[in-house]
Length: 109
Image (cartoon, one colour):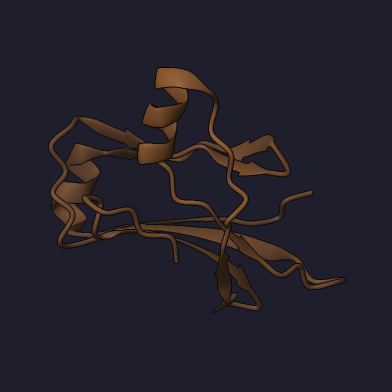
């Protein structure tokens, strides 16, 4: 799962048949040029998984301890092949009551 330093407790996994796929480091990630690109690169974790022919996949987003939610909302932008397929939103009040949160994006067409 891709974990960015400073965001421990936030996990994103790609699953097939309910099982997380093996992730590989994306050594070819390219950020934009200049200050914007430097900022983007410092905030990005890029991984890839092997596609499984004929299988549907799901993207599981989890937020749990030790993550400390110090903002009213936390949003995710899930893209597949550059296209946004979901934008789940976690409200602080929901995270506070459940002490954990999970969103599964499935049925990607």
